[in-house]
Image 1 (cartoon, rainbow, N blue to C red):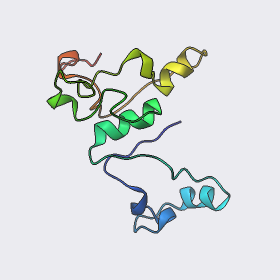
Image 2: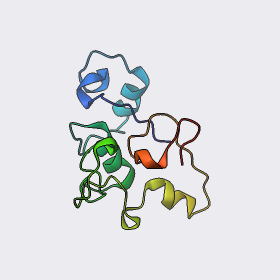
Image 3: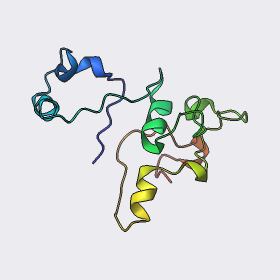
Image 4: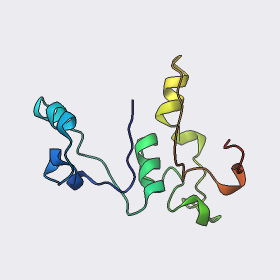
Length: 117
């Protein structure tokens, strides 16, 4: 399970010295489970793309937010098939996946008020 919190850096949680109490994360960290080598950007969509693909956000085509996509390389916000997501890898191995919540990694022309593709 991946739990992604927008606009929350490592320094916000008590696990890494911040002011937001995260006792369960701290318990996991105290037992050796720490994921602290992740590239973040100043913008949520590119950071999410990096997390979900395991690649630099520019490599995945997400140099900026989907709402301001351009035709320039690395700024289309359309993830290339060559930068598949962890969900795609799981799916191809027989595991069901889903995505709930905000999604700044879908181009505006692929969404509507009634559904998201």
